[in-house]
Length: 171
Ligand SMILES: [Zn+2]
Image (cartoon, protein in one colour):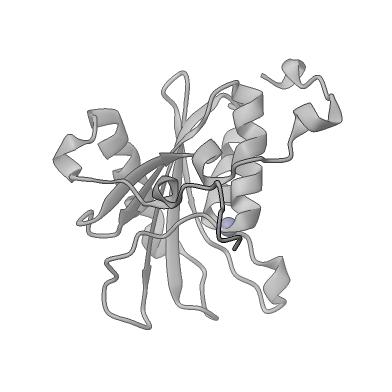
């Protein structure tokens, strides 16, 4: 890093919130993600991820990770949940909750964040819904919760705007 970097490191500090400070809708979305956690198909990593997306109309779509012997064919919970919403005709996503746990280590204090590919997909749908999608990260026991947004998680993102795509018909 340049010694005179203009980037403020403060902006990268995870903002944790107490569970009681979540709104009821945020808390319900976290619960929806936790509810599908154990359905993960994860023979390779034994890492469980649950994700739930909330649409503007209040619909919730949740999914878990689906792994594959060809590791690159694995699909993350976040993209599964977004796919479910999309195939149900609900693309106006305004929030996503993500939770995770592992069979390989004791409970983590660290909330699971979306991988880079999922951040890219969440960003795409933030362009469809026309809002900075809220991303709620929670440990499976809800002891640690952080609330952020996709623009915070994926700054300077590449999306439909850069391609001058009109995606309004998908909204
Ligand atoms: Zn992912």
